[in-house]
Image (cartoon, rainbow, N blue to C red; front, side, top):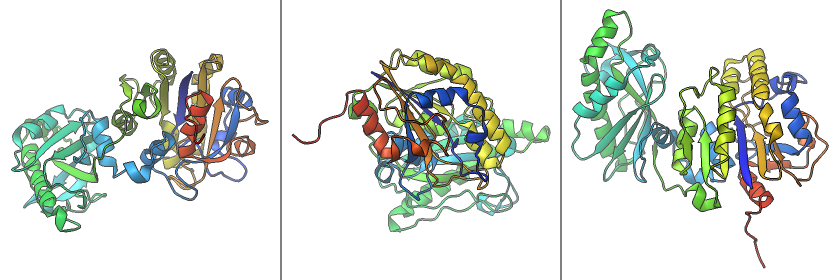
Length: 408
């Protein structure tokens, strides 16, 4: 038995009166699948807890986020291609623009995304080659858009430090502060890195060219989301299933790499609304031929939720529905299909909420229920009832004959 898990990021919603973007959308293919499976609602972490995409995915894959999640930094670093090791300290990074006199900690952030710079490989390379620190190693890796990832490696490092990113324009770059005495050395090294990288970037020819062209300089690295990497058991060791991820989002690719899944790369998988949905589905089905478990991640509905765009979210869900039409032809005697959202992103809230998400499982022999439409107002009537994210892999393992017996 193979497993195909389709996670549509932020697809679930709280509701606008008696409807949601998912309920309002024309979704004949999702409804077809729901009628042939078992459905329910799911608290991806626990009832009342607002999940991040990172913690939600950990939980859905059967990894207790309270044990394995220390911050987004290690996941982003893994997603950016860094071989993250237990004990590493990792950060999310923005290339930003600062102006003013004095040290970088006296300069004002005028653009947290440096004009949404795209081509910055030269800048990443320059920092890696020219910044030297005593007592620690570091790796700066390029990520999508204006983003990067940073790892510090060495003895005596702690993630008990504050961010340097002021989180908004108009404020100065923050000096990193230790939250306890164990982090004083780390804070000192990170601040030294921030200063030295600024010197390298400020004087780089690419930034001179950008200034001449009237573009913001990418002359500062803004750090946030620090976390200490911990040992995460590999998915195949845990479940006996060879896994692959089909995703465009750095965060999701990072989770895949942390658990030892193969991450399928394609420049057309953007992790945004311009992603190639048909190619993603086609790739997921092709990958299912060589892997036991394939996670197909689709990001854009979450973006529309954050934008408060009801119609945009509805229309994109309809595109998703069209793209997954080939899933109706799966041999459900050999494939267990699961479709769900990782969290709700209500357009009325413009952020994640703790509202439970719709989930369905389609497989030959599963106890089919009377649900005939895949939306928040119907699936709660289904046979799965209300489950937690950490329950899902246990249910799937039992359905495909991989569950271990508990007791005699």
